[in-house]
Image (cartoon, rainbow, N blue to C red; front, side, top):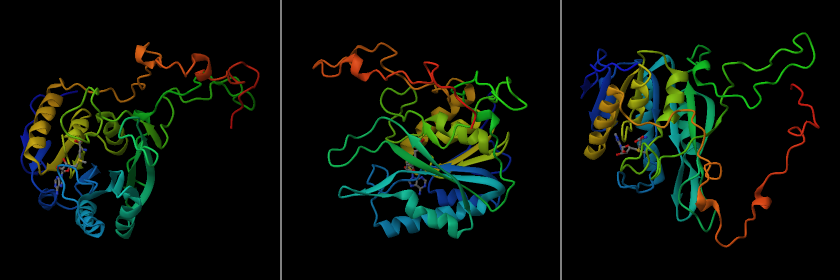
Length: 321
Ligand SMILES: C[S@@+](CC[C@H](N)C(=O)[O-])C[C@H]1O[C@@H](n2cnc3c(N)ncnc32)[C@H](O)[C@@H]1O
């Protein structure tokens, strides 16, 4: 799976396999000829004053994003995809979901939205004046074509009822599920990279590798280029390398370039620690974590237990829909 001889190039050339560009993504995009990239996946700065960004007026931020998105559209292959992962712009306690204000930029370029994926996670700031934010979105765009790449089989997930059978009709008695698993749907429950995560670096908002692997496997093929204009710690290149794709990315901050380089080298060597793509979420109760017992005793075990569903007791027959 891993080719130990991969060289990390500082600039784009079609013959390379990995490009790590230290600088503004517009300069990297400038080096890439039209329609060369199969998958562009990124999480841009959200304009919320993180250490790597200067908070701008929203209109100026959107103009800046538009310049990058235009270039991304230019380098996108005819059957390629753009996945723009964003959360909220927050100002004085009110929010503007960034996908709502970025969507018109993509649609004005003639791109079509195929899914708006909800990435749900459980850790983050606890708000006291509104509900704590526990999801972000991935807008997935393609060109106006039916031939865009979408490989479902490599990203199927286990069914809830794999033993389910057709109970009537010509297939009665046969298993009704695809043995390869089911479509993961458009709500993805993948832990975000916080302090106990095996992939955690010092970057405040890293992608989990498994999130990007799902996009890489479904929207590109072996040897295709995957590009991340706002690379951070190199996660998109890591996900690309792990599945024999080529990876390119730009990052302005030297310290994140250093982290990216180390992670990419470890991915090439096959030694990078990564949370497996479909690993079930940690359940502290099932794991027997003692901290799940409330010292103030309000939450009796019996109150938390779900009543058994009728269908689990066999009192209700599941029919195929
Ligand atoms: C939200 S973070 C991306 C984190 C990344 N997804 C990861 O897994 O580590 C955005 C990154 O874009 C970088 N950045 C900001 N403006 C940039 C630009 N014009 N060109 C390239 N990188 C930029 C920031 O330094 C930051 O690390």
